[in-house]
Length: 517
Image 1 (tube, rainbow, N blue to C red):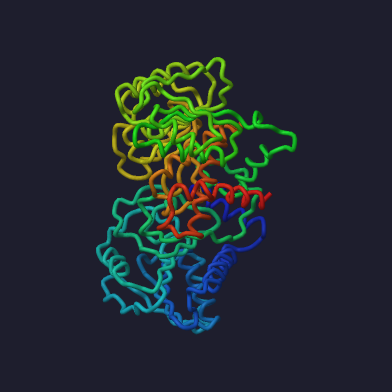
Image 2 (cartoon, rainbow, N blue to C red):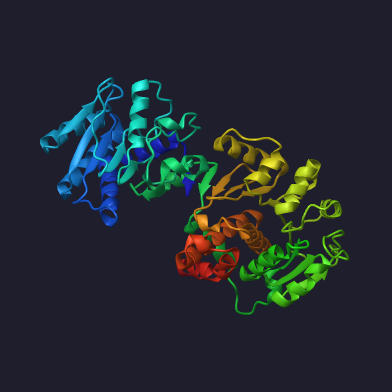
């Protein structure tokens, strides 16, 4: 699913209008109708018992709010409409609809500058339709700043923002967050908007939902964009390339190697290794310090275990890169930061410089790169790094001012070193060597638990071993990982999930993907 710019969204709306020979006000009515349907379908919203307060601006977003008000009132809801008169410039669509609602006997009040704020019943649902996606400048007027603050201080039953919370920009950072309506639910039209996927805006967006307004696929397919949202159709297209065949054998599904572990951290390697098997790898070798041998052999008899001479940490990664048929390497989980380990990792990267072996670098191996940044120059093209935000910040050696700047740095690093970076978190984002960003759509807060990242690395390495490209492995890996976590959370709750639960539900995640096929 493509994430579009403001200009592209406007063009998609206009194409829909032109291709269907409808008016813009009819498209507005369709959007409001689908928002209305969403509200009455959700049992949480007691439409006929709890009143609605609808705040509308004087643009097209306000027009959406007026249509929605009319539909709610016709359904039997108690509706109070307030026109937030921030400017005296009305869109034609809003002006037309405002005149129409008078015929339906819907009363409204204007909120004008320097007037006393209206008394709003907190035992109501609030509909926010003040500004739409086109809003792109700060509110400089003290009165309206105070009004937004007044709204956010009130504890309404729910706050539903139409398309985007009012005051939120969709193409740049908001420097003053006090000028954004805090929504509990955001009903966004047709496609995700970029700020919906960024952590800085979580408290203002609440839970967001896609509302279909009938854009035309033929037009969307032609639009060029750098930002994408991973959906099940994307996963379907990747998965069907590698369906298992009846007469296949383990050699068809790759030989991967996991390098990691140190005294007290062997569990991270075990999590990664089991996740690799559960994701479909044919053969797995593990390279750990000597202290991990018995634990891994007892826990995972399917794996081949090679040990370093050192008991507590890895001091020399002795892999036969020329004679072994190695399809992918995953390195870093629990490996530690001992000087000998750092030297061993650096030596391995130098050996791999001219090899075409796909590689996933995680955890302490990323921190080793951060300690010696010139190693980034020798990484093979297509190498995958899987940092969390702090690890990525260490790689950059600088902090970012906001999420938009973070994405800029992410793209820049991927392009410069021709690598893929999976920046982990809610909506984990994958940056590619050509400057594209892919945001994940699965996963939940329960996955913020020790070992979750080790599981992801094992999954991505497994997919690489099976012959998926670096890009496909990242996309498929983060989606499956998040989906397994979602299935686990429904069974156990977010609070109770541990990394092992994610591993144990990879199979069910695959079964769900197969259902789509």
